[in-house]
Image (cartoon, rainbow, N blue to C red; front, side, top):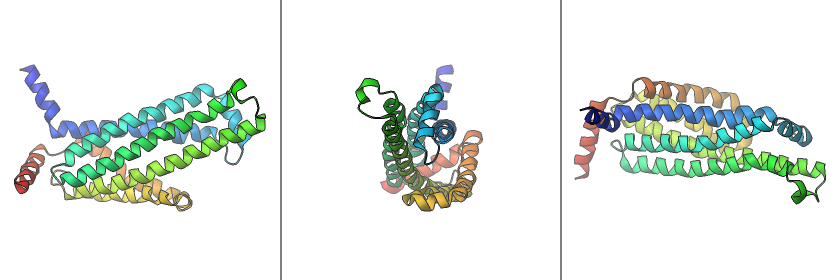
Length: 244
């Protein structure tokens, strides 16, 4: 009896929705912790030498940031696949397309993590990089810091498009409040402005506000309410009948 109950819980759309909320929290904490807070605290804008000094002086913190950035990738993959499964009854093709976009985004997120580790590897290259002066090593490490930033900006564009598509699917669903879809899509439009990094950096405060307004309510709803199981099953049945 216990095994049957556990199996039903795993198959429940509400359970999957809550797990999606859990992975959303984990991805947000790890990605922001590694890329924004830790790396951001070590980088001195326009000063390669000071940035190098911060990285070498806080090596354990730097590696913690790298680990968080890397761990964020599987968390985001799990979040993506759970939402794909949840929104198949709304529109299977669009849900699959959204998942594909975010899988590409996750691949870019993984590459970003490699650029994250590169500056410290350069600064501690030892004899392999002995031909470079300290100033040249600082500059080379700073180049990788910039590459990390550019790669993360590209990831945010894919994330933004994914948010817009998921927002539309939420809006078209019958098992979640439509307002959550509208807010999540607005958040996605904000991240999509990283197609032009100068514009995105100019609108940084507005993008952060849109992100908080769009992503936090969805996160809370998924964790607390999940989805309406009955309406999800009704929409899934309706979609399957329409395909026949």
